Each structure stands twice: as C-alpha cells, then as structure tokens.
Image 1 (tube, rainbow, N blue to C red):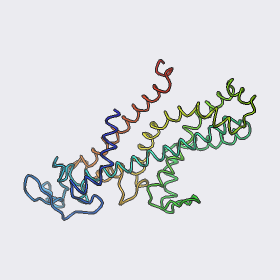
Image 2 (tube, rainbow, N blue to C red; image 1 turned 45 degrees about the horizontal axis):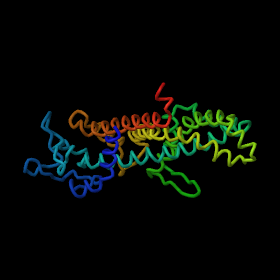
Image 3 (cartoon, helix red, strand yellow; image 1 turned 60 degrees about the horizontal axis):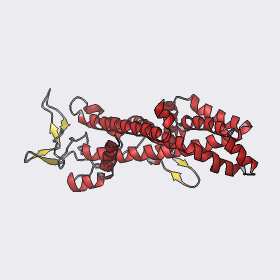
Image 4 (spheres, rainbow, N blue to C red; image 1 turned 90 degrees about the vertical axis):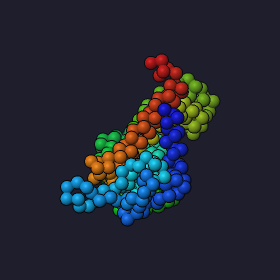
Length: 304
C-alpha cells in the first residue's frame, strides 16, 4: 500500500506536467465549444444528446487516451483526468497541512495539561471537551460558513476568503481534541515515572523536563497519529468541498470534482467515480501505513 500511496502522490505532483505536455489542456477554464481527437477524428467535447427530444449536450465520455480526455469531460468541458490530478494536490496539501497543525497543537496542549495538572489542566481539558461535544462535521461546517465569506486574520498572516488555507485551519482545529486527549493521558502517566523523578532530583527545570524527558517518549505516538489524521482530514475536506464550503472555484479538490459529477452520474459516471476511487485508495493506503508505523514503533501493539 505504501507503493500505491507513492504513485498517487507522484501523479498528483506531476499534474502541471500532465496538463501542459500530455493532455494539452487548461483544467480550470471552460471548454464548452472545444474539440478533441477520438479515433483519428475531430469530435466536439460537448456532444448533442441522442435520447429523448435530443435537446441539450452531454460531455464526452472516457476515451482512455491520455492525450485526449482520458476520463472524459465535465459539464464545463474540462478534462476530468487533469482536474483529478490537480484536485489531488489540493486534497493532499489540505490533509497533510491540517494534520500537522492538529498534531502540533494537540501535542502542545497535551504536554502542558498533562504535566502541570491542577487548574491549568482543568481549564484546557474543559476547552477540549467543549470542542469534543460538537459533532465534528457540524462544527467544521459552522466554522466554514462563518469564515468562508470573510477570511481570518491570525496576526502574523491573513487567510483570505476562498483560500485553500482556510479549510486547513478549520479542519486542523476541530480535530485537536481527538489527538490531545490521549497525549495528555500518556503525559500524566510519564510524569510519575522514575526517570522524571530522577531528573527533578537533579534540579531540572519544568521546560527541560517537558522537552528533554517527556516529549521524546510521546513523539512516537504523535508520529503514529499523523498519517491517520491525514486520512481523516482528507475525508473531512472532501465532505466540506462537496458541500461547497471547502475548496472554492476555480481551485479543485476531489470533493469538488465529485460535486461536479453529481449531475452526470447517470450519463458520465466516471466524473464522480474517479475522485471517489482516488479518495478510497489514498485513505486506505494511509491507514495501512499508519498501522505499519504503529507496529514498528510499538512492538507490544504488534504482539497484542
């Protein structure tokens, strides 16, 4: 499965090369009046309907020719294969970036709450409980609806409305409790270990205890969480984009391509099937990879 994940990532990174050198198309521009080559003949990308009254047009279906609409066209006459690769770039970017933000914030909160305990732990734990209490998709949708029109100012950077970094921030934030709580519990257990007490006896400061004694023992758990959160975050991004509150046009993601193919599901099903298969394969590969990392870093889990 690691090889499958590598192929998917490499193909998505090569999206500009495929669009410009092989497909010779702009996947973000409408091409309703365009033509393409099929079996040596020039045919329109948007073909006249043959069923019913014969009114309207239907996008060209898969030609299985990498240079001429491999997976067909969508309702705007855009190359689905090229958009699939570009959409994968955004989906992977959002999944990885939001997972990194989530794991960083969760590790920081888990370390502080678990190590110091007391009032600070109580406040941080209640804040996590508040976020935990909301259904994750409902919270993500609510934040997206509020922020999608006005953006967000973080002080050191401004995320404008429509920016792909907006779903990165939202998705990374809503999943923090799912990682912070187990990290907090692990830190509470480590705080009572003999090596921590020995470091305290040698006069180590709290900062040194956290970053030199405790953090190295929880970082393996964070590494295990990372690929699993990438998979979960990619699914969340696809759901938000399908609801038109994730990645915004003219950008594409696998969720927006499924939305584009919703109206063509009976006539050109590959528009929706292709990104769905890509999501399923990527998430499966990430989960298998995450299980492999866990077994490698925690032999006891493998024995269990």
